[in-house]
Image (cartoon, rainbow, N blue to C red; front, side, top):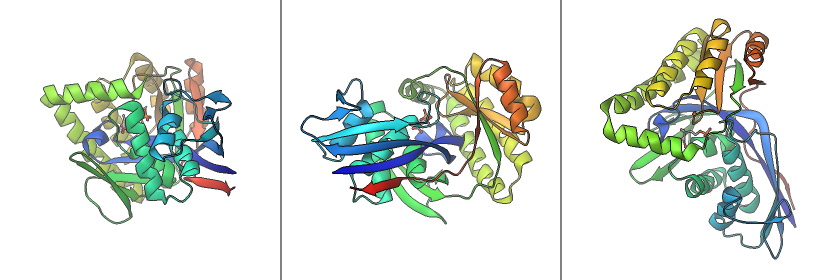
Length: 307
Ligand code: PMV
């Protein structure tokens, strides 16, 4: 019997890193997907190769979290790994969705978040929740209209809400550098515990994300663009930007309402909000980086068939 599921990658529009501390954030699903087929087998294999925790931490923990010892997974993905586009969350959600075939979306999001925590260390549930729900989500420390589910770890509770995102042109620029999320998140935790400037930056990023939610509802791209620029400056303060990210942002600035890194940073990707996506893509390619013109609001977890 084979159980199949797929789930999308994502971009974080506002609030990465601050969301780990419980601050508001907004993320949207992409139309790039990861598919997982789960088949019963005596020895667990990943794409035909025996499963090892060191080489396949996300599938390894997906099997343990769902209590599925004797399953093999076949994985196929169009989400570029290490680009800050949520490839690990898409894999965790698709794997949990295929293995936990009776799980509700809330249960998939909760279990896939456990997979990310086990594989990566500190994290927020933003990536796994948007990959499960699709479309777009707003994460807040309070529950309000559009509440989908809530996730709690330690003294932080994240309330996950559906949010409508108007049709907007977003261009992703990938630096080509994969930076591991775990150490970046850990470094921000260190700065946060030591310096009030870092603590203030985290709170201000949350304020920006909350303001961005209001502007999304009116489709105010000019206002959203300037919030993106402010968010980026604060991410620089948190030490997660890089020379390449700066170079990409300089390249797209003349044609963008705003631009910022997306995801963990340290490399990874930037996003530009623009009404000239082709021009932005060209500017990114001219500097030797990789552009993706993105459609936001991709479908969430989909069970492809049921055996
Ligand atoms: O590395 P990515 O794209 O999965 O982004 C992680 C987002 C962070 O806020 C930095 C961490 C998290 O788990 O929320």
